[in-house]
Image (cartoon, rainbow, N blue to C red):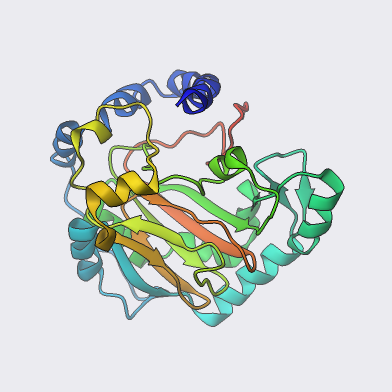
Length: 306
């Protein structure tokens, strides 16, 4: 508990800077974890528009079905990136330097991960591309796909907008300690508290099995939350606590072939898992209803000026 509170205090400068940039962020951060206030916020959503879906990458996915599954479970599985799009993103990620463990001073390409760990003597669990993902035309095409926006508007309301686009590697490492796993969001179930209403799309650029760091989600936890998981400043919970409260059957491990995709309401409990046999490469597109913060890219623990 002491270490968790210590990590929370380390994030205070970032939270303060977020509030200065957008004061509306404070009431969301303070009250957004309480189901009563979240339900009230959902009542203010506007009607969705009807978009032209002619050029979507996912013509086989029914938008209404996705929204229904999200409302019920918080999760929908069934997207698949076209092979050419997936291949272009994979090629980009293999040749473009990423930032190890969120540190902009430490760049590496994926194939040098093992050598980088040997050279530094430290665990390198993640390699984020931050704004460099926008240099990948295929990733931008996914970001702008009309079906993803249509689903987001159906679920969140007509004001839904893209708030973040992320591409990152999860690397296997035998050196990881508890702090490394926490930084990589791989040691505890947690929920995201970045907006009143959110939806995220995840795409596995390479195949993911149970040994390559699958994402894990707790079905229904976006709409049902015990009181002690609402009235707390700590968003993280142990797997034992989650299983005891929400049941083992609600916990879904998401594996799939290359290009496999899913949508989730990130207010539901979820976690990453440690890649063991090989790296995982994920593209994430986030939609929300509030103005995004422009100072930093999602995941950066250090406050930076724009």
